[in-house]
Image (cartoon, rainbow, N blue to C red; front, side):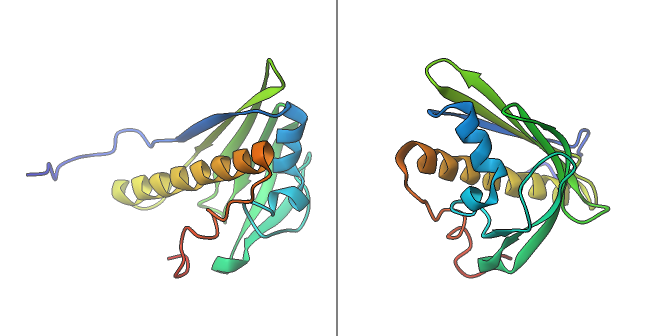
Length: 161
């Protein structure tokens, strides 16, 4: 029998990452230049990620858009942004660690989940972890093998819900 008295004592963060066998400048550009990012993640953006940028990302297949506000930007090292509508926006960090052999370790962290009860927050964290894991898989396939995975578009074949 499951314990029904579980309580959330700390709001979890999303943490994922992967080694990408490409130089840091290529990995960084793939996530900041929407003409590249739209090949494997969102379908439209109102602009590139850069210092102080306020853009909107759209996933047309799901009829979903999200506001994005860049809070910190260090070329080839870090992009930190808030995304989602207030007051439920979360903070996402893309950290780029240049490694030997023209490889890059990309680490993604999302934090600041609020609203709802513990079950609802954990469900949002789990959903986001899945989404960012799919993002890095699609990014890796694109940069290392020039393959456009439709993993993000195919996640919800009957529509986002």
